[in-house]
Every structure is written in C-alpha cells, then in structure tokens.
Image (cartoon, helix red, strand yellow):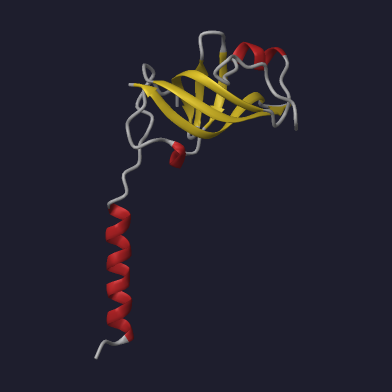
Length: 131
C-alpha cells in the first residue's frame, strides 16, 4: 500500500525531473550590467525611427533588427538600423536558441511611454529570423 508520504516524495521527484528538462534560451550578446497603429511597411513592420518620432502608449508594433546589448535583467537595447529603443523582454519569451548581437530577430509588442523611463517596447513575442 502506498502511503501519502511516499506518494508526496514520488510527485516531488517527478516535478523536479520535469523542470530540469525544460530548456530556456537566453541572450548571449554584449552585457552592460489604444487603437493607434504605427506606420507599417508591406510586411507589417514599423521602424524605431517612426515610433520615436510619434510614440503612442500601447500601440502594437512589429520590429525587425538586433538586440545589440543587455542593459539589465530583462531589458535590452534594440536596433533596427533606423534607431535604438529599449526593449523589455521577459526571460521566458526568448526562444530555446541563443540570441546575441548578430542574431536578427523580430519582436512584437506594445509601445510603453513613460515620463521617467522614456519610450520602450514591452515585448510580447520574440522570434529569430536569422542566426
């Protein structure tokens, strides 16, 4: 007969084993410690320059470029060739493959306009376009 204590130990072991198997990608590049739509190109993307020129809080954006450096935990500098903007990316939104400053990515998110921290992108999805 299985006791509650044995069942609890078995469940804990299974739970621990399953969490060890989960692979999580990470940024490996340089480390330095409403209804408005942004102007978009034919493929649905916009540019950092367009966002910074006329930022609107909560506007949905799609950007293609590179995470050029890590600023702090879950905060990165994103560059699309037209400018740079801060991107807030949760660790669990990274793909399993490593991402560095040379990795071309697509980010989908919302513009966050804050008087103190400025304009940044709250990233909801990150996808590798080319390694």
